[in-house]
Length: 135
Image (cartoon, rainbow, N blue to C red; front, side):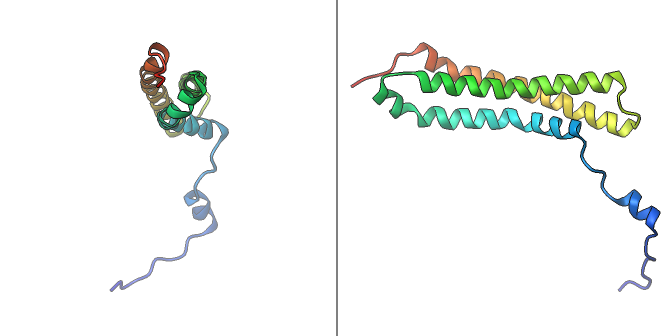
């Protein structure tokens, strides 16, 4: 068992140990980081879900609209990542740890956005190039 108990923290130590509130920049970078994989997943699910309705309607418009929305959402990730990188390089933050975290999140958002943007475009090609099969 534990022989001694630690003493209670004073108010200064409690303030230093408390988590810092999220800034708008961190929230945007976090949203940018997860928006590209979410866009890809939604594109994949909705593209498969629209196969039979598109055949019934005789139109590829649902595929095109889904692809357009997914591309815009994945592009949001790249734009937010580039914005974060620019802010990190301009020295907007005084704290070096915050600057490194911002730079890391921004790079990850850019890379994830670019990767999933390519995946969405590759998944969209059959809908653009192949005709609807009608029975």
